[in-house]
Length: 135
Image 1 (tube, helix red, strand yellow):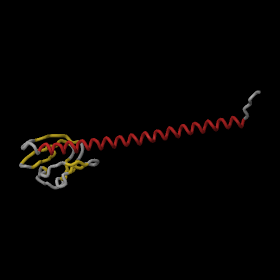
Image 2 (image 1 turned 90 degrees about the horizontal axis):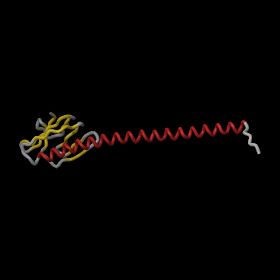
Image 3 (image 1 turned 90 degrees about the vertical axis):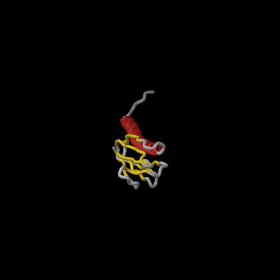
Image 4 (image 1 turned 45 degrees about the vertical axis):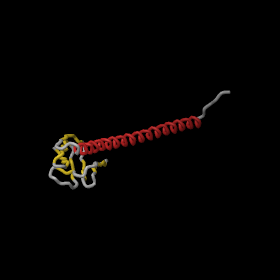
């Protein structure tokens, strides 16, 4: 018995090959899209963790300063933060944390909401109050 491939079967095999290549291409594009999405989520998670770290570092510095009168602590923040002494809260673009101290103010003496810019920060315990300032 001799098998002969006719022109119509050759065309059908070529069509199947094209379909298989197309399916592989679509799977590759789908896998790449999922990879890019996960990479973006990873970058956003890292940014959130970095901002949370800065927030907690400042909150710990504020809390620590209440224990030692006249103490000064210098630290570096890599993100801008807003300090709300009335709500005992520190917020950044992606993070919120709290501190248990009521008498917090900025270098001009204001205890209302104020912003601390990224860079060097000095936290000082003076006159029964915590003063936070950019240096």
